[in-house]
Image (cartoon, rainbow, N blue to C red):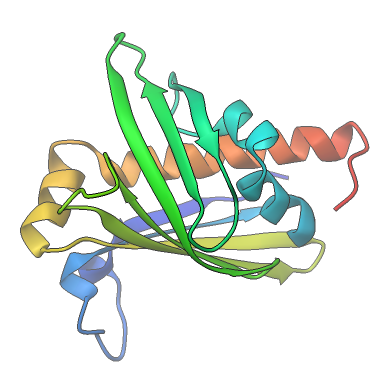
Length: 175
């Protein structure tokens, strides 16, 4: 069963109270037909990440990976047009299998690094994943959304995750 992905800048969502970071956020969520433990594992083990990470047409080469608070994932995202994007993530919080917080930029000292929190919640036999990304400024958020298509890229990334883990479920992986 296909479940929809929702994604939008936070200021476009109807909410009773706006957070102080709402004008700097992008929130993307999706229900994935796989157990929470398996969806979390697909996000936290490099053997899985390298199979699905990134928008449609992109591939990933990992240089180093250590999943722990303070650990780093240093990788290159290869675009379909041949462009390579240097990427760097450090994990700032891990609460398995419910939550991951991270800082994501081009390098360790990237002044425009973004903060993301990923929440994994059971939804019946499926898992609801929400990716909340906070940019340093509203202008950086707007540029990412308009110039780099961050909302669509995030939606495609979660769709890739969903396709990957549902294929694992079909093949008999345990969650």
